[in-house]
Image 1 (cartoon, rainbow, N blue to C red):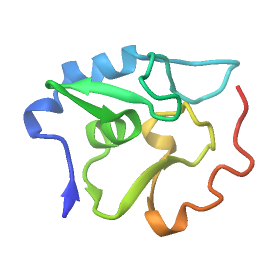
Image 2 (cartoon, rainbow, N blue to C red):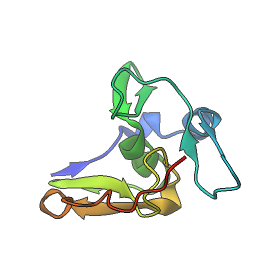
Image 3 (cartoon, one colour):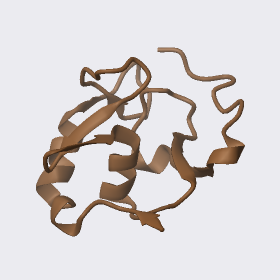
Image 4 (tube, rainbow, N blue to C red):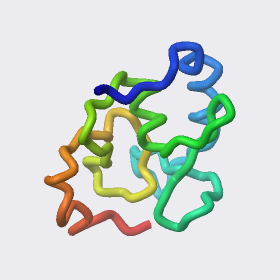
Length: 105
């Protein structure tokens, strides 16, 4: 099973709205999520009446489908990064130790 947003939610307007919720810090090339989130470890984006993980939403909006059994993580190790070109698909079983050496803001 693949994870994806419904096609009617992947419009240019939704992409613009998503980007409007990001900011760049300290000259980093990352798109840092700049919205408040209900849980300190989860970045959330609201699309079409539903909350989505901001990383998953970014990947689906700008890249495409996410295979089942995987997570989306930033290759740059910046916990706030949602830039599509920095996101990688990682099998859930391979995420242990992912945040070692993360980027401090």
